[in-house]
Every structure is written in C-alpha cells, then in structure tokens.
Image (cartoon, rainbow, N blue to C red; front, side, top):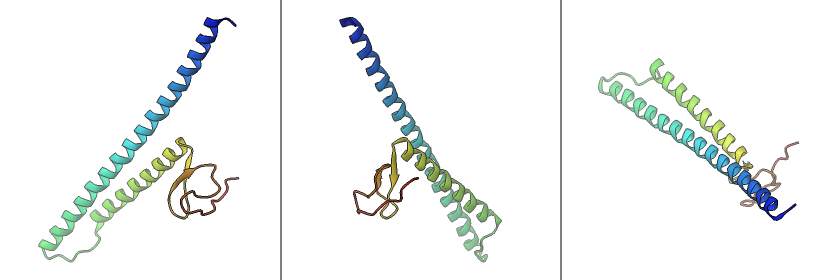
Length: 124
C-alpha cells in the first residue's frame, strides 16, 4: 500500500467516525427537544387545571374531579410516559442506565454505581 492509499484510508476512517459521532449527537439533541416539548405541554396543562379549579372556586362550586379535569390528568400521565420512554431511549443511545438506588446515570456495563456503590441488576 503506497503513501497516498494510506492517507486515503485514514481519511475515510476518520470521516466515518466523525459522521457516526455527529449522527449520535444529532439524535441526542432531537430526543432532548422531544423531552422539553413534552415538559412544556405538561406545564400548559397544569396551568389549565389551575384555571379550571379556580373558576369552580369563584362560582362556589364544590371542587371535584369532573371529566374535564380527568381528561387533563390523563393527558399529563401520557406525556409523562412519553418523557420516560424518550429518556430511556436517550440513555440507550449513550450506552448508559440509571442506578436503581440513587438515580445517578452510569455506564450500561457497570455492576456498581460510581456514586452510591449500590450493586446493579445484571441484564442477562
């Protein structure tokens, strides 16, 4: 293999590694945006719930969980589930997991948490 072939091969390998890293970073950014969007939607629903409850209070109605509020609560539950799934996908993309004891992010292959020392369940 001559000098120029070696340079070409090295450049090709470097380009591929850079492209893979860039793709992974872009995927992480998209997942973080999805999480942020869902969290914003939850905040809007909290505001809507508060307004509905206050209007009931103003009218001196008994505050109870009617169907309108239950629908909003259900939407919040669904968004929280989406956030959980997206965070799991983000961890998988980063080859990480969450310590079952303290919630610290650790390497997926770790047998013990580097924060609290808790032994992690093994994935078999």
